Image (cartoon, rainbow over all chains, first blue to last red):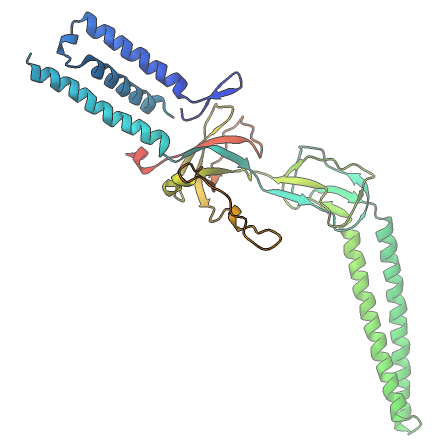
Length: 66
Length: 290
C-alpha cells in the first residue's frame, strides 16, 4: 500500500491505517499475555511492548505494503 | 525460569524489532518508488500543408480515426484554378519550344548553303534551349500545383483519437499552423519522476507496478530508459552574460527528480486512461524476487 489513501479527496500516507492496526494488535498481545500470566517471563515490559509493536508494523507493511 | 531466560526472551524480541524496523525504514525511504508519475502518449499535431477555408470536416472530437482516413479538406477552388493555369502555361511553353526548335532546325539547313551567319545560328540554338528550359519549369510548376490540390485533403497519418477539436467548417487555416492533435492509438506510456537518491536502484528492463490515482487495478510495465539530462538552473546567464547562481542551503536540499520512461504492458480491459493522468510507480528490485 505504497499507494496513498484517498479520504474525501485528501490523500494520506498508508501509515495512517497501518500504524493503528499494529497498535491494536500489540495492545491485544499485551492483554493476552497479561491474562495468560506470561508477563512474568518478560524482563523489561516497556521494551518488550515497543519491540512487539515494531515487529507487528513490519509484518503488516510486508503483507499489505503493496 | 531463571533471570537469564527472561532477559533472553526480551532481548530476542528487541533484536527482531531492530531488524524489522530497519527493513520498514529502508522499504519506505530507499526502495525505488515515486508518487510523481504521469501517463503520456504520442501526440501528432496536424497542420495543413496549404492555406484556405475548411470546406469539410470529417472527424468528431475524441473519436477514433483510422490511418489514411480524411480529417478535413480545404476549399479547393483556388487550387483547381491554379492547376488549370499551370496546365495552360505548360501548353504555351510547349508551343513556344516547338516554334524555337522549328526555327533552329530550319536555320541549320540554311547554314549548309552559307546563307546565315554562324552567330545567328548560335543565337537560335540558344533560343531553343531557353524555350526547352521554360517548358521544364512550367512542368515543375504544374507538378507543384497538383501536390497543392492533393494536399487540400488532410489525411490521418496514423490511427488515433482526435483530441481537443476546435476546428469548424469555414475556419481559415494557414499552412504550417497546427489545428488539431491526434493521439496515436495504443501509444500510452508512463514517465516516472524518480528522486535522484533512488535513481541508482533503477535499471532498464526492471518491472514496474503502476497505480492510478483512482486506485483499483494495478497496471504493469517495464523500464525502457532513464533520462540522461535535466536542466540546471545555474547555467542561465543574465544580460551581461554572468551566470545566475541560485542560493542554496548547505544541509537542507531537495532531491531533484529524473524522468524514467516506462512502457506499459497491454492494458486490462474496462480501464480508461488518458495522457496526463497521475500515477504512483513502484519498481520491483532484486530483493523482491527472493
